[in-house]
Image (cartoon, rainbow over all chains, first blue to last red; front, side):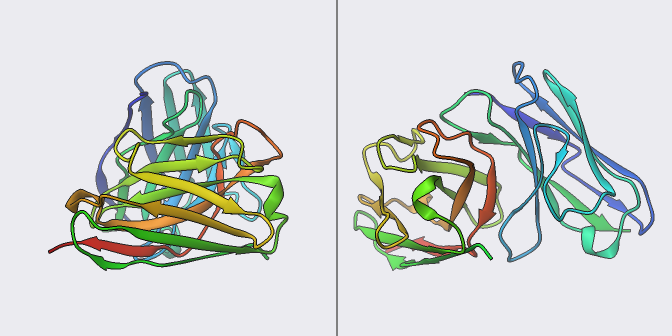
Length: 108
Length: 124
C-alpha cells in the first residue's frame, strides 16, 4: 500500500496568515491526490482533487499543487472557519485508498 | 442536495455482529460507487470498503477482509456494512461516502460527499 505522510502534524497560525501543508507519497502517484477538511465532530469535506482542482463551492483561498510524490495544500488567507484538521488521500493505486495522518491547524 | 445518513451503530461485545446502514438521497444512488471509511477515537481516517455502482465489484481493507461485507440495495437507495467477529480495534466512527465517478465499474476513490457517521464501540 502507498503510504502518505503529512507535515507538520499540527501547528498554530493566526487569522490572515498564509499557511501551507505538505503531503508526501511513498511512491509516485501522478496527480491522483485529494485533500479533505475535517472539523471536530463533523464528517470530512472534500476540498481539492486531482491535486489542484477545487471542489465546487470551496473558497478560492484554498489551492493545491504538486505531482509525483510531493504535494501542498495552501490557504492564502486563513479564516476563523479554516481551523480544522486536513487530510491528504491518494487514489492512484488501490485498494487500499490511503490517507495521510492529518494536519491540525490551531489558533495561535 | 446530497444526503447520506448512517445508522446502526452502538455498543457490541467482542466477537459479535452489527450491521450499519447508509440511506442516500439527493442523487442517483444507483449510478455511483460507495465507500465506508472509519475513524478511531482521536485518530485519522482509514478506508474500509468500497462497492461499485451496480454491486459487481467490492474491495476491502486487509484489516476487515473476511469479517466485513459491503452491499447495497439500489431499489432502496441504501448502502450496508455487515460487520462480524468484531474486535476492540474496530471501535470507530463509521462514515459512508459517495465516490465522485459515475457508473464506473472501478470506482476512482474521490469521496465528494460524506455522511455524519455512526459510532461503533466494541467492548465487553
